[in-house]
Image (cartoon, rainbow over the protein chains, first blue to last red):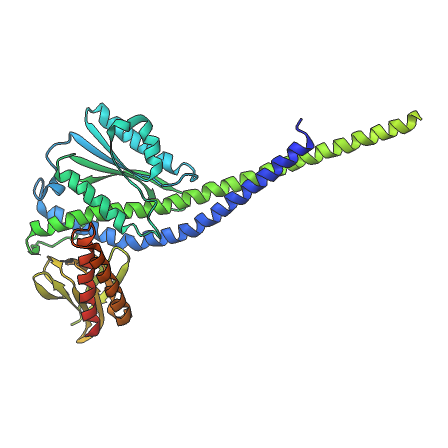
Length: 293
Length: 135
């Protein structure tokens, strides 16, 4: 049986924990709003870019076009880009992404492929480093990013990846990140970056038999368009992941606040019982003392 | 001219325009071109310049784009700009000060700094934007 003083201390400490989680929840809610706006604002561009690429790719035919689109013709070396948050305390957000990445890596390894890992965000690196330290080829730090402006970081990473590809470091690149469905659901997904693939749901416009004209040539357009497409995919993944992180943190902290509240109720009850018991005990002592006289 | 052209202009930051218009004139890398409804499928890269949106013969909106792509399909015209601003909402003084800032950054970076190309592109963009604002 803990003493009254112990109980009192526990209650104070849980109360201050609740204050912190409550504050974190409110901060996350405010940040979520901004992150969500940024993600929403970026979505039309990504969507149109995808449909433009889908159109172009469908008119290119199989196996034609620059390497970024057609691939190297091999599938031996895979680059897995794992995108997680810089900070923890956001529920299962990071672990889910890492779990998805682990599954993918394990599958590739059993298939006998060479795997290379590039991480974005500190948390994913920490978790993956334990098992796959030898596969690591790079890391991108997002802690410098302010105000949901991932343009610079995204383009930097995109350039890095395309450069590695041009140097023949890998054949296929896959991006594992958390897709922001809504505030309650974030879905970890693996998306193929290189060879560039248009999403299946991209709208392909029926040209009704007309022939596309290109200015300058189709190849030149593809050559400028594809790296941009890859950058766009990375940037929108960063935006989605950023919004997801805040949403996950918000609900995790909301739960924590609620749990702390319940704990305080339980402890207060225990405290009051103990206090009552002590008063009763003292009264009995006084009464029985008086009777003895 | 009953038929309208569906036109949308998006930059990574936001969707600047989406709607039905009569006529759009855009700066292609190989020359300025106009798009009306029922244009043949066409795709081009863009250079820095002004995209004009026309309704009938009057210019409804002028947007400045920094490079990008234009894609004409039977469904309409889509411009994917690297960066774009509505010229109706920018103010010459801000552009001027941004330009000064970018220039001084470029100077302090020296000749072989890591961001020289990006900064040079920024200066070029702002110079063109300034010219567009003045006219």
